[in-house]
Image (tube, rainbow, N blue to C red; front, top):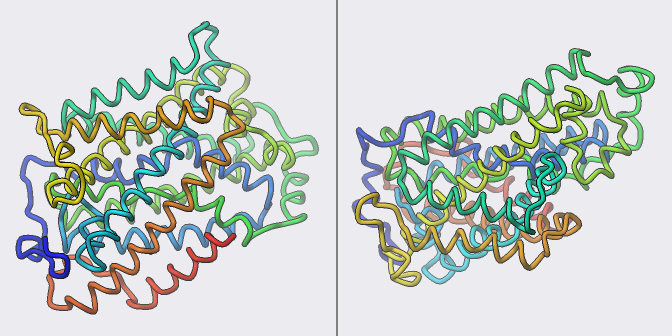
Length: 419
């Protein structure tokens, strides 16, 4: 691909793959990162800190996430490539910035964001399952299992990811419905009226947009799978936009339910408020099965990262942007083995660097979120540049209300970064 002109193959749009991934697999991949535990913690802590104001922060974060999803969908169908953002940015702003963006926006979060998720899983599993194991056994075991599954191919990935994503999404919605309907195992002292009144006191909105950002981040992880999709023109926008809408509904129910059963100060101060909510909703016996659910949520995040980021790096290697070894594919399964092993090693490095300390979660999340937001901002810039430079290119999907949507998204994300 030229530094200034998209390739002819790319300009014709993605080619359908009759035996490839269908809508359900793409939908599952689009929410695979979002249904992780980090989002649940951000959601419940945000309700504790901001009360009703946090719902405003959620609405702003959702709008930003939707703008990013639409931008990625347009560029992914216009320039179908496993390289994802690197391919879009290369065509728009040049080769070197494209390389920096992928490493800043996707490799860096793998070092910081994924370890935060692994620490949460380790804490819950260690507390819930009375087995004495050496340090880091649970997180390293999770990484090894899903590294192997991703090497086995996209068919295995699709089946595993679909099951993981839908189970966690169902848990979020059902837990919220049970709590909101008043059927929770334990009630708030004073009842729902006291809880609702408490949500109106000392509300916070704008300062919590960065925290709400974590509830919706990551739908673009599906875009490196476009070359392996059955009908990407139809299914990719539906998967990304539909995934965000489904997450918004489920997360709203989860947030409201947690605030109706647990006092705001406890939600705000707890390191694992999502576990507190599960116990308040379903009783003390929920601790064991919630440990399994937490494992599934972490697995969903890791499985999606190991499917998407290695394909980005492999695509970059094929374009000569990173080490050629990263484009090596398994002779039988066709998966980017070296890239998968490289990405799988990154959260282990972050885990060891943080010492597996639960207090390290917030700094890890902040580091990952800033890197991610910068990548999103450059994706919007790439969209604007490609619209101006290449208006003639075929776009199976186009961002509506252009240029208002990308400009507002850039302003919103700049605000989040500075706060």
